[in-house]
Length: 235
Image 1 (cartoon, rainbow, N blue to C red):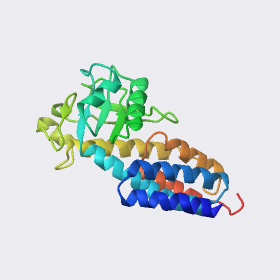
Image 2 (image 1 turned 120 degrees about the vertical axis):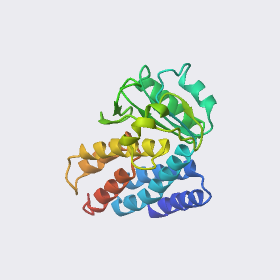
Image 3 (image 1 turned 45 degrees about the vertical axis):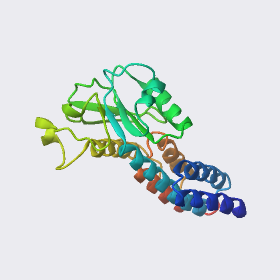
Image 4 (image 1 turned 135 degrees about the vertical axis):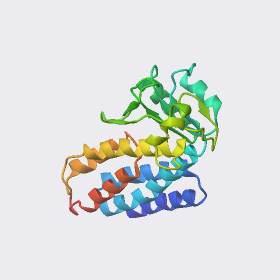
């Protein structure tokens, strides 16, 4: 068992060192499946560390790229949207929905593109947006909408239009990228809040794994690591 996992994780570590985050993530996911199958919970917990880091770096690359907060005026197919940028982060709003978000993320992953996607079940002009999961369990979280000056337009890397009167809803110095990261974390916090199984049970592992389909929130990886370390040796 362990030699196989050791070999996979050695390859994952090398990929992480050369900033090949997609390869590192794929190898970690493969190793996680093996560790789970063999109930090797301490090893499972260790695998989560490079997986969390690869996903964190992938997210940081994405939010440093082109941003779009709202898609009311965005036409064409999700695949065609990727022609607008090399890396970036996008929040879909009405009239786009779950299938559009899934298609966009799937296409970006096939192309190994640094793209992060959120979905808001809201009109772009709403003052509060309701973020919803488009994978995994049903999770919803209402958040303050971004400033109107930032909405429904392509924002080039580093672009930060004056938020105007909406600045009062932001932390001092916050950027569009900060808004996106904060929204992602709030959705992740809501996902964690819905995990009810107690520590030391396989049910908690399963619930947290499902929530990682909602968002790659760093705290979810940490809670999953805690759950794995709390598992009985023979479980």
